[in-house]
Image 1 (tube, rainbow, N blue to C red):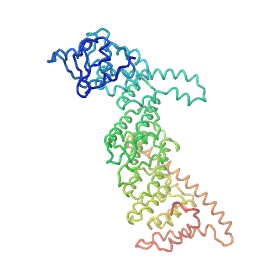
Image 2: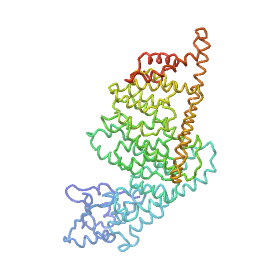
Image 3: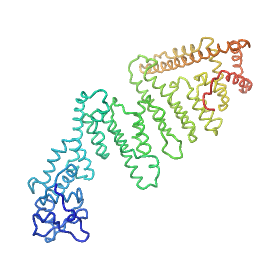
Image 4: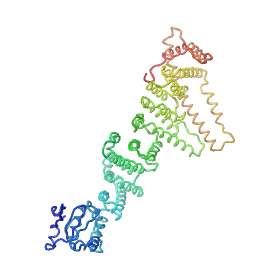
Length: 604
């Protein structure tokens, strides 16, 4: 490549300057007769070599009123003065090299100057087209470089078709790469997986140089060409990590920072575009940490609602794979609670809708087993939400309404036992001492005392933070459970009622009958699971009682004596007509519960 004299090409501040490096080689005795201005840079040149190759300059010179020294300005010249200097070299017959770095700007500039073969044989348009078709489009790396260079050449690059050809070439070459990689996998040993992945998917990192507009077009073309879904997902993850890594709360929440608004708008477009490009195939397993990371970004940059709902819907469809740390999403609004509770609530609503849709789509009448995927996922999510409630309960800014809304989202059958719910409510009451008695009662009504384990019941019976009515209910169900376990009728009445209530009515449609049977079946499975937990508690209690009877055989306290005292206190729960419970009865039960309790159930 022949380098030019930089002094002869520099712009003049007062008057144009004759370009000796170009003209003296051919027209050493001819003075310049035309001045061209590009981006404020003035060039004193010769009219003949320019008009012989450029149709635009020929027309402008012909229409000029000054037939002497013409001065023409090229407005919005593609590529700027640097590309124009290469055009001058070509017009004066000087050698220079067409490369991937300048071919896009030369093609757009030659289109702007109308340098077609109408005016000169093998003109610049034809030469750049040959290089694009025979060199650029045959290489994935060169196509990426040229497409990236087109970002500053729009809309001319779009009009001459450079961007479309590069996008098609990239997607076509990626398919070739994957075909070659499928064959080369046979040449790798099982121990070289890391080397194999690095060699086969090198283009994933290369795509990160593109702007989000061109990147969207490339990924869409790849999906049409049949590129593997896992490769597209890996590319989306890498692009998100490279383009969104500088985002942060302090960067977004500081409105006084200059340029902050434009940065946030750019990040918002990137997040919304990446979410729209996520594969829709059910077989595509996008990592949950990536989905939650994109959801956090979407909240921080305030994307539109459809973008966030799409992420929440994808997360809800695989809710049983979510961890507790994933749900701890920081709240983007200052002065509100520390965690984004509304987002978690919407995810739970989507999850329950997915469960209902799966049940409605099932056309058979066969019943599910206890370990069925839908039933097991609901129970797993129930335990996860109880842990989430306990984690957000200490937040002093978490209002009671939001806390109750999260609890009420899940149905009753999602919890076999209410120990986790009781622990979360106890932590919330402790962290919010300003709650009124009525608010505490409202919270405690959400706990099913019949679904508390022995350990949780012992703790609740002596918990001074709970309303008295809660302790009375706990003691009542404890005595009722003990009585039923001894009489051998635990759950028999309940099971018979469930079975009898599940008989379909003749007026019900087959679909309603099936829904009713599914609902009754689900309740029966829940009761069986609860009975298993009760049986385990009773076995533990029996072991403790036997050990206590052996240790205290000399003092004459037997199991029947303790039982008779406990059953005798049940009559006190009805109490006098006023409904008040004598204090002595509650204290005696509390003292007895302390002897059986092995440890505290939550922090006191």
